[in-house]
Structures are given as structure tokens and as C-alpha cells.
Amino acid sequence: MRSAAPAPRVIAVVGPTAAGKSDLGVFLAQRLGGEVVNADSMQLYRGMDIGTAKLTTQERGGVPHRLLDIWDVTETASVAEYQRLARAEIDRLLAEGRTPVLVGGSGLYVRGAIDALEFPGTDPVIRARIEEELTVRGSGALHARLAAADPEAGKAILPSNGRRIVRALEVIEITGKPFTANLPGHDAVYDTVQIGVDVARPELDERIALRVDRMWEAGLVDEVRALEAQGLREGRTASRALGYQQVLTALAGECTELQAREETVRATKRFARRQDSWFRRDPRVHWLSGAAEDRAELPHLALTLVERAVTA
View 1 (cartoon, helix red, strand yellow):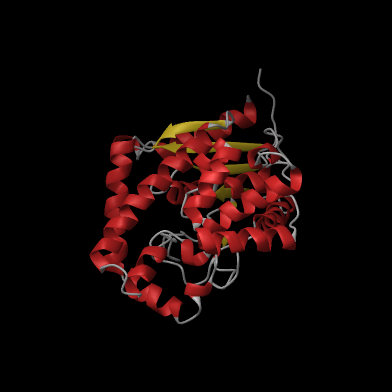
View 2 (cartoon, rainbow, N blue to C red):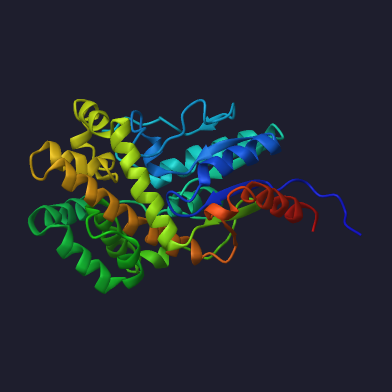
């Protein structure tokens, strides 16, 4: 006999870019009387809409979406600050008896929201020294150093992501441990059901290419040009966003627009593989097929999974 139990405290919809997380999050929030809490690090930025595939107001289906458009593009992202903001939203929703639906593919942000993660502090002297080294030697050389010190971090962080490489090396120097050793086990702060949207690589690659084509058609270049006037190029985090980084390169005359478009597709495919690898390492994620032939069933399977977790 199954006894009544409270609804899961939090639902997290995770997986690689272009898998279909956003639409599923809206569906679950609608059916469960909840709100979506964004866990995409780049959708936190105001004006970065086309290149991040941010849902339009109409596509949100009347569901409130929290932690969208909260930072200027000149602001440097902070996982610790995101953690504070996300937990405030989650706690507010729980207090109101509503279901928080965390949606996004930024793995560290998801874990920061739902798991017992404490982020090491910073040392301005160490940080400045490593940043100077980044300027002199470039991100590739520092990434090689990181990969030697912490192979897992080397796999998880793109060689072009100088900001994250600097932070990882800083944490290693401060703590005397590998960067990934500072991520504890899967010790949850909230009772969470994590749903991973799984799409086979060939289909996902096709979706990514199509998404990039649509972004260009929707005016990504004009969006980047407008954000450049607002300081995007100086933004240490936002300027590294997929698509935005490539268009900025084209606007600077360092490549053609076509080359920027092609590189955006390649870089996004690489990023999707890293996202998938990150979430696959978490045994708590329940994977459901988001393939085209299963798309109609995905929302109902996800809802069934949530309900089973409630009453099992």
C-alpha cells in the first residue's frame, strides 16, 4: 500500500543544450503549479536572448521564470552569488507551497542550487598573478597546466575559457587540492528529482546546427552589436558565451561572419558533449529520451516519473 507523501521539494530538468529542457520545464511547472528557476549561466544576462535560446514571453506559457535578465553583460558571473539567489527563489516557492522547477544545462550552477557546495574564497594576489600569466601565455598554456594538475577539471573546462581556468588554478593553489576535489559528493540540500533529457549525438548535432542557423536568421549579429555598445566585449563572462564570442570576433574583423557561424556550431557541439558528460556522472539523474520520435511522450513520462518519486 502506498502512503501519501509530499510532492518532491524541487524538480531539476538538466542535460545538454538543444535537448528540449526549456519546454519540458514549462510543462512541468504548469502541471505542478510551480515556477521555473533558471540554471543557465548565460540567460542570467540582460539582452542575451537570441544566442542563449531564451524563451519568449509567449513560449513561457504564463509560467513565471525567475533569475532571467538579472545581470548586465559587464558583470562577472559568480556561482556563489547564483547559489544565494537560486536558493532564495527555491525557499520562497517552497514556503508558498509551490514547486520550484530548476531548468538549465550549467552543471555547476545546478549543483550549487541543490547540493551542499561551499565555494572556496579568493586570494587577490594569487588571482592577479594567474591572470597576468593568462595575459602573457594565453589560455591554452594555462589549460595544459590545469589538465596536468587536475585531469577531470581539464576535461570539464574548455581550453578557451580563461576565466574558469584561472579560477580553477587559484582554487588549487589556495586549497592544495585538485579543483574537482573541492566538489563534495552528492549531498543534497533539497529533496530533488532530477530529470535528464537524453538525445543521441547525431540528432543533437543536427538540432544544434539548425538552432544556430535560426539564431543567425533571428538577428544574433545585430543583438551582439547592440550589446557590444553596452560593454559586452569588456564583460569577462558574457563575452565568452557561445555565439557571442564568435560574433565579436567577426565584428572585430578577425574572421568572416560565415566562419563565426561555423565555429559557433562546432563549439556548441563540443560544449554539449561536456554538458552530457557532467550530468552522466551524477547517479541521481533519471534519463528520459528527448529524441524526435519520443518528443510527444517526454512530458508525460517526466510527469509520471515525478509522481512515482512522490508516492513510491
